[in-house]
Image 1 (tube, helix red, strand yellow):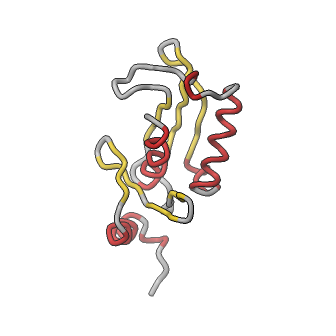
Image 2 (cartoon, rainbow, N blue to C red):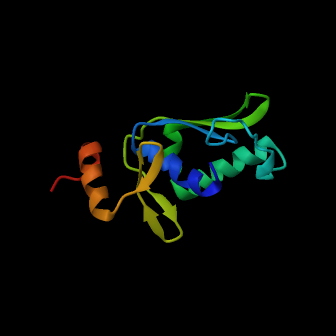
Length: 130
């Protein structure tokens, strides 16, 4: 996945059924490794990821995420295991927020009305009583 896809994939997995993301693997499942990401070390990559998640999803996302660098086919790749979140998580993009879900093999941003309907069906316990 490229950088733009990675930004939407984690919240989409959190807001849907969870799953596993592999960074450094192409769409055909071939391990490419993390070297092209340009980090000085794996620790720097993991620190960057933690900072990115905190800033764009909030610290509550960490309860549903586990990530580590692993060997796959002779390459070092980033494995992100995602459990479904107990509450909806929105991706912060500057001053805007977006809500993503998984739709088959892709991540889809929902419109405001679709987000309200989805959250009402999927996270009913998180909505305030009227």
